Length: 215
Ligand SMILES: [Zn+2]
Ligand SMILES: [Zn+2]
Image 1 (cartoon, rainbow, N blue to C red):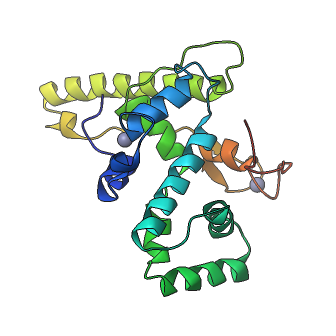
Image 2: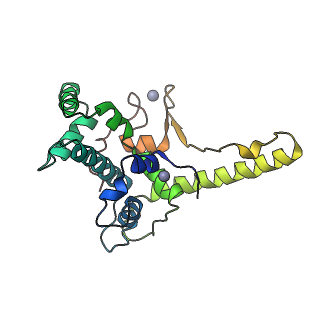
Image 3: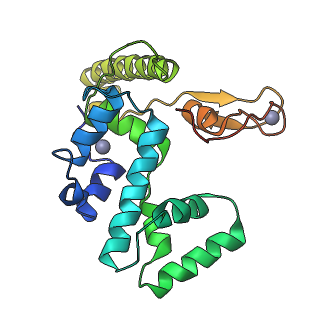
């Protein structure tokens, strides 16, 4: 749908990730198949797919630099790199540097849950069939609302453009983001980030168990 390439597209190209895809035609093919569950297996949610993607990235970098990937190496390094244990993380980073890997670069190239969501819904224009257990329906209904808002804004821009009120306004990229605000303080956070971390405001909302294993 969108002709812009997102971060995920760029990372796939930069690291030749399609080259390493053996089960499916491409990374995109795998993501769509796993997301929709169309290959006959149960479907994965955004979080599981994001994790898969980032681990694949890590493994590719390890392979290229001759860092051992046997056993649970990639799994455990990934957990440490994305975890909140500062000292452990620095240790793994030093370890990576010793193998000729730039840990900051790799971490920068890891994608977020919301990038995965946008990639599947916008770049790939994917649609997940509503089946039995559809764990993503809340997010999808917010996505639909955003898409409707976006198209309404574009209509308005086109009219403002032809009226000369906002010349070339149609050239603008329109981004719609649903923000959740805390009623008790200034905290504002994108809807998907709140769902991802499990709370709206750390100080004024109950904090649930975060991120781990939603599927
Ligand atoms: Zn994309
Ligand atoms: Zn608050």
